[in-house]
Structures are given as structure tokens and as C-alpha cells.
Length: 416
Image 1 (tube, rainbow, N blue to C red):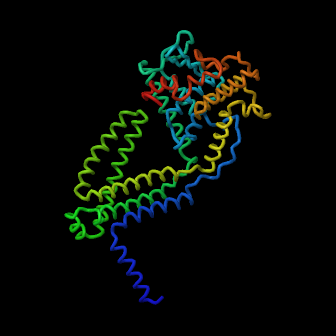
Image 2 (image 1 turned 90 degrees about the vertical axis):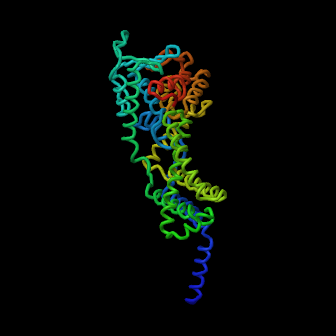
């Protein structure tokens, strides 16, 4: 191909590009999608998971709250971490959870010979740093619930904050790779696409088209990028408000929702002045697409490190073991006998990993069949009193159950 033919072909592509300004932003948005897919394949996929193998012991050095922190999707602290931490302290015998009708009380039993991990120690010290002395135990004790006393709320909030800070300090780094630089580049590509799309003549009102064409291209692009950022801000406030309201976090949820509504009204008025009705629908559709694209890959680009994958594989093996109904793994020669001691040992982890009900079912099946750990065997741990005997205790302690709701009310959270 000669120079003249090449120049003619290049000019043809340029004329096509300039003749179809309506497609510039869309092409860049689709390019952002291609970039994210390439980046995810290159650096965003997790290390290969190991084959699922039942594990009947938790990974050494990890509390129930720590395993929930690592197991959650996305990884991080939630209300279940705090509930699992308190249940874990009860199983170790340093505190007692007492159910008295619809009321729950926490009693300090003292450390004794118990060995607490750092996050467990922070919860224990915060709960019983202040409180009333129980006349029977001679130790500190308080009741839980939304109408509880100030000492209950103060202690629970301090324990919540301490546990959250300790878990963030220990687990936030080293277990996940965020790939933020890759995501940042994807965000800028999307902003560029939105910048071109926002001031395309094909979507603008006829009164504005001539003014836009007279502006320098760079100025239109900068204005378009700013407008795209405003779209993202409105969508972020709306999504955040809905998410918090669904989680019953009413104050912040209404706050973000109100901001989203106010900024949305401003954006709507501005858009009605700028665009035709079909153009507004087109721009809004692509802006929502771009927001969802970046929000989704912000999560997908976070992957487990080799260390994180090793721990999470162990977690999946532990869940596999505890979820085995009908005695599926009870007959393994190297597995422990299904006694109440074994039940209590893993109960906090079952609460943390969302399989307390399945863990209880295993004991219903095995104990009723006359296996080791007879049905008449009672509570082993001294940390629970006034609750159903045997494995049925899980129905009270499970995340979302009666104890969890009372604990969250004392922390100032209406529901996990």
C-alpha cells in the first residue's frame, strides 16, 4: 500500500469518526468494559482454590470473629463478627450468657486459665471494664436489650469498636489484593467516555448544539467529565441510601437518600435543559451502565492473596464439615466423635460462618441414633445458662436470633 492510499484510508476513518460523534462515548465505555475484563483475567482472579476437604478444626490463631471477617463477601467487619466473638468468649468460659425469658444477661466469670486471642481480649476487657457487681458471682454483670441501662450500651459499643479496630488492624492487609491502580485507570476511561457522551451534538437540544460546536473541544470534554462525575455522585448517594435502608441503618440511609434526592433534582433540571428526551434517556442509560461497571469491577478486582486463599480454603473445609447433615462425615475414621464437647468447641465458628442450624442438625441425627454423646448429655460449656439443652442452643445464638438482636440493640444497631 502506497503513501497516498494509506493517507486516504486514514482520512476515511477520521471522517467516519467525526461524522458519527454520537458513538464516541459509547465506544469508550465499551472499551472500559474490555479493559476491565482484560485486567480481571490478568491480575484480578483469585489463586486457584484447593479441592474441598472437610476440616474439623478451625485454622490455628484465628478467632470466630476473624474467620467471619475473612469469609464474608465482601471481606470485612459486620454485626455477625461481634456476635460470634461474644459466643466464643462464652464457650471459653470467661463470660456467661444467661437467658431469662426474653432478657439476656452477660456475667464476667474471670479469665482463669483461658488463652484469649488479641481480638477476643479486646472484647472481654471492654465489656467488663465497667459494670455492676453481681451479688451471686461477685463479678461484673449487666443485661442486654434496647431498654437496657447505660452501662450495657456503653460497654457493648466500646467492645464493638475495639473488635472492629483490632480485626481491621490484623486482617485488612495481607489477605486481599485490591488492585486499586487498575481500577483507577478504568474509572478514568469511563469518565472520558462520559465526557464525550455528555456533549455529543446528537443528544443535545438544538438551542445548545451551536454553542457547543463553537467551544474548544477540550473545554467540552472537561465539562463533560465534570457532568459525568456529578452523575456518579448522584448514583452513589442513591445506591448507598438504599443499601443502608435495607440493612435497617435508618439514620445514615435517610441521610444519603436525601442527598441523592436533592442532587438528583438538580441533575434532572440540568439534563432537561441540555438534552432532548431521547438523548436524556440515552445518556442516563450509559451513565448507569458506567457506574455499575465500575462498582462491579471495584469488587471483582479484589482477590485473595495466597495467604488469604489458604485461610479461606480452610474455612470452606470447616463449613463443609459442619454443614454435613445426616452424619455424612461422622463415620470418617480420623474425625472426632460427635459429642457435646465437640459441639460446643465449634459452636462459635458455626455461628460465625452461618451454619449453626446445620451443625445442630448433625447432632440431632447422630445423638438420637445412640452414637457417642448420648441424648441425655447436657450443656458442656459453663458459658451458657437458661437456654435450650443440647444442640438446640444454636436457635438462640445464631446470627439474627434472639441473642443477636438483644446484643445489637445494646450496641445501638436495631438488627444485624
